[in-house]
Length: 595
Image (cartoon, rainbow, N blue to C red; front, side, top):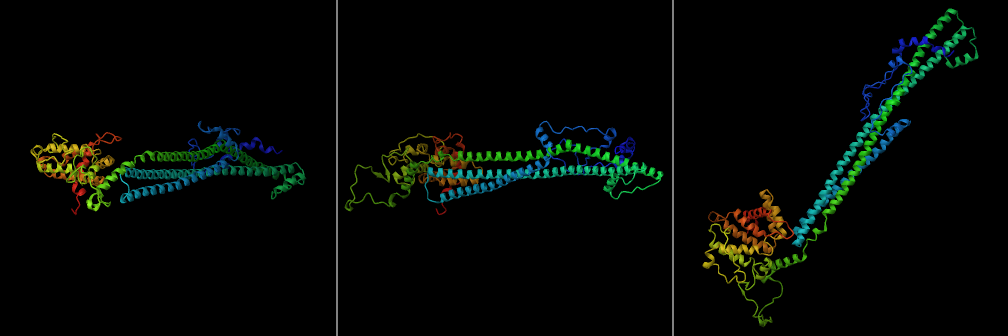
């Protein structure tokens, strides 16, 4: 008897009730889609659960075809395992939370490390600059030690700059990781909300199905009681009473005439048919919704969450790998910058020899602090040998002048300017100021002045008639110095200063390099350029402009490159530029206002 309400007559009325009794659930408009799910076109902001009314009109047992869940490149085995698990969604949500914590902690570490590196770099640069500045103001060692020391300070400045750049990279990586964590958190929340909405809709559909079933059960019990009464059975039957007791508040069917019973039977059968149709429709809707969720929506949600997890995990791994590479690079760069050979360029013996020369030049003569070596015999001084070399005007006869170190010459002769330069320049200014092309035209070079400087009179006709011979002797003496007047150590500094395009800045840098020259070189250069400055004042007659003088004396004053340096051919224009700039600013560089 309980199977009777499902006869075919009740199904005829189903299509009339399908539209009014339909309870298909749809998603709220504007719901966020799973991130990076290009295949989830059916889950848009206004998408619905698949309409089942058409499917039900065709067949109640029709199955929805399973759509393509994943792309070929996706890990299908992992996805299928997650789909088979009841806790796939919360599993991925918790995993993403863990990954986000790791990502944010890495970002915080990069940020703090950047602060440390930036502070270290700036402090190192400040230390290097202040140290170089303080050393330049103190009376420390000069020569090759100064060059190596300045190189060391520049190296430390470079190390500080590298650390500051490293800190900038760390800040960039920290920001990128923070943005990844923020974006993944946003997508995780939207996908979680979408999954919750789907689950809630399925639960509501199941609850509606349960209500329809209860309504059909109640109607079926009423029909059974009516049929028992119609057949004359007692309404107090224990079985019927037990069922009636569970329904509570149901209408009591008493004795009635056959007409009333027939009308009641028709009414109950009509309500039971409607309840049966509603129950069947609810069952089909729930079944379709369940298939839609487990076969289509759940895999897409799991895929979106898995992609979120992969994105933040791979992003964190990439930035950690990048950090290791940058850190290794900065360490290797520091190691290649701090090479010991740059400190091996210090020549202590050479520095001491130059210091001896400069010290003797600056403190020698009558102002010497040591005891006297010579004096009257009656005061106990020993007699000097008559065979010793005699002096004429403070210059030793018989001692060479060409090819002798400049400092040694000036200490030996106890002079401020080499005698050969003073003698030649005075003769040139006396007889050659108005000579066309003086210094440009070559004369007959002679080393007659080498060992008998005072014995040669440049005022005689032999010399004064062709002053180009004297200019050639002076240029030859400058070329044969063991070290050029501008020194090998400072040569590159002059070249770099001459390359500066700004006139004022080039003047300042060249002035600084001139001040770095040893005392004998500085005094000789000052005297020579003063002489050339006077030659230039008659340029209208002798055609010796500043540029022409620089072309003549640039290679002479800088000499050949040091053995360890590259060829000076490429530097020749800058050598000329340096001499021309110094000549143009001779008064600013060499002449004191007090003079």
